Length: 222
Image 1 (cartoon, rainbow, N blue to C red):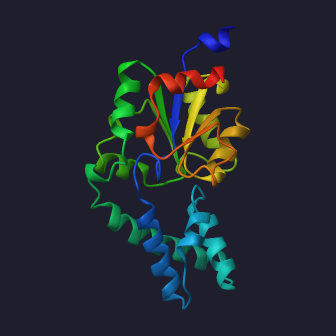
Image 2 (cartoon, one colour; image 1 turned 60 degrees about the vertical axis):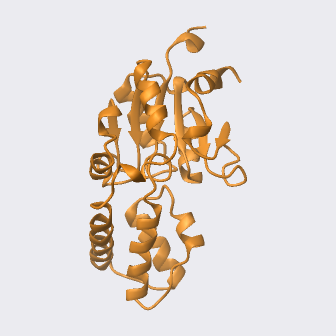
């Protein structure tokens, strides 16, 4: 019975859940691809959601049929990140996705622990620019984990920092890889996006405005 009475903890992915930086990733990757003489589609960009930078680059090079040395890959990844960071430097609170601020505020008011679980290595800058940093009790991102989603490391570390049991954690994810990671960590998952893309999640909503604190707390009873 202790499992059902212990407080929940919430772990949020960043890109596509709290803020929309996907467009900046797409523009930066597309620019890099174009500079090497090939194109990069929005459909391909969808497959990169939740995937770290170096793995994303490997996938793009594979689609293009191009081979690069490790040193060349590092330079290409750095070039992409420079373009991306220049774009997100201009982000504002207006780019926080619908329902994000309201839900984070409600969770904080109830004393529910909140963590970030993101592949992004630029999460600190994004949270600062969008004025969301103060909501988080713990931040786990691409700078603090060695394995990317669907490996559960990012969520396991977040739960550890929150001192929360895995089964009492609710993960909010918009990527298939992220949902797989949360399930591998034995956590509850709320998918953000289209149900047909996120079928493995316990519940799927369009955005965070579509789910309430009470509905989140009720997930463990369903």
